[in-house]
Amino acid sequence: MSQRVCNFSAGPATLPHEVLIKTAEDIVDFKGTGIGLMEMSHRSPEFQNVIDGAEQLLRELMHIPEGYQVLFLQGGASSQFFMVPMNLLSATQKASYLNTGTWAKKAIAEARLFGTIEVPFSSEEQHYNRVPSQQEYRVADDSEYLYLVSNNTIFGTQFQEFPDTEKMLVCDMSSDILSRPVDVSRFGLIFAGAQKNLGPAGVTVVIVRDDLLARCPDNIPTMLKYRTHANKGSMFNTPPCSAIYVVYRVLEWLKELGGVEEIEKINRKKAAILYQVIDSTAYYRGHAEKKSRSQMNVAFNLPTPELEAKFIAAAAAQGLKGLKGHRSIGGCRASIYNAFALNGVERLAAFMNRFADENPA
Ligand SMILES: *Cc1c(COP(=O)(O)O)cnc(C)c1O
Image 1 (tube, protein in one colour):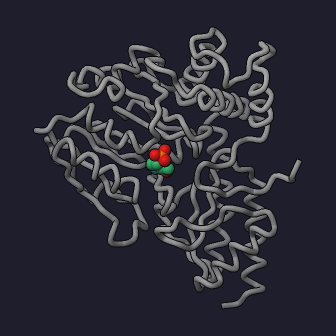
Image 2 (cartoon, rainbow, N blue to C red):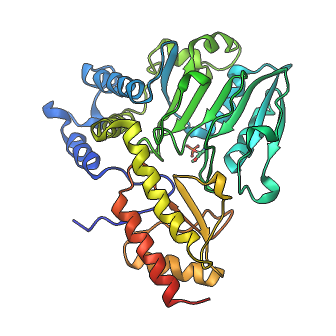
Image 3 (spheres, rainbow, N blue to C red):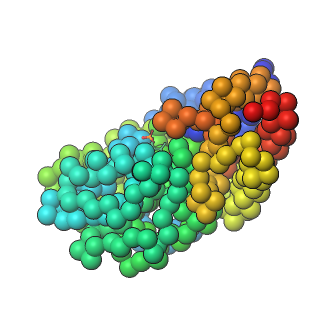
């Protein structure tokens, strides 16, 4: 088997190696049943244990209080951009969205199909290099909810604190769910595509407060109603079984490691190592303002695009892969989600120092 590389991909992203090994075994023969993971009925007791186990562990690790549903849906995080307003907003109602990046902007465009959307803050003109402090914007009194993206994957910015407001919060946590403790009770709805911090592509987790299910209008398609999936334990139709299985394994891995409280410490340490390199030289420039820096995606530039291309190629040649920034901002980006190991970050930091010495601007 080939040597595993340090995979800095933004998503789908690196998974814990032991999860991959267990998954590989179960794909062929699920726990000695003689049936492979992908061949197993979703109505079997074996799969019921998997989906129940995944839900249970997510509740435990996130300390999800009573009164919330955990759903495993398809269509990616992007489908939540329309499902949220379709279920929670009527044509005469208003919602507020913070425009802190590409994913927020896309969500705003979708939400406008369903109601009135106000945008009390946007950092678009500053190339999304920061998230706002709460003093910088005001949410309309008649707004139904305040929508935000907790971590802006492409630009490497992250809310350090969530808005302290009476307003119901709706949050896209696709790229930082389970990376730090979150008080779920402050949110009406949280969603996350799995492929960054939770598992493979193909499943999206939605955590939704029970009382919101009553809001889902009757005249929307059955599959697009949160209530449908809540009433059927995410098995109204065939769920993405193998993706849910991997999420379950990742959650087990995280629990064994000490849970969210423990991984947060490791995440802080990892990010600090890279930001320290960036701050110690004028050679590297971080994209995000310091106060908005993400612990999950570190976006940075070198003195010229030519040096960036050389950096990315030279890093890849040493097994440090996936460092190219998103096509919308260019530069470099190191995605260092939960499953990305500390020693890979240390290797990148050493490489960055060496590269800067050997390739003066
Ligand atoms: C990746 C990402 C998305 C899009 O996810 P899909 O599952 O591809 O639709 C949405 N929001 C954030 C914050 C992301 O990082």
